[in-house]
Length: 177
View (cartoon, one colour):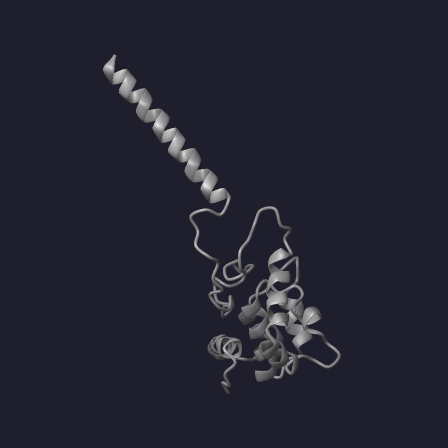
């Protein structure tokens, strides 16, 4: 009888702790503050032909729609006057930050596309169209390769890494050429 009571108590305690843990996770408890970890771009290699991960988009909440993370990074850019001014200079004529950033998964992906557009003299609209295509979004590397198929894969990877460094420098308001 004592074993049965101990077993029942242990089982009840286990179930209680599991439900508390599950509740805390579903309500954001136990996670520290969200941190933007930089760009979410890849070189278009064997791992990069699918959609980008959602890491680095700020906090997410199941009650928000699918565009909530995008609006957050766009609003963050617009609130940071130095970053906003710096990125505005990189935009095609007659293009607003809101219009240019719309559709990108995160701030790093957007800024990297702007830098690659300038570095490789690729129309930003072409990169954006490939990277934000809702049916088949391409990684930055895959988009570069599609627009410039004669560019060797090694060079594509170099350009993606260069863009990642430029993103960090741009976000930190430093010059990097």
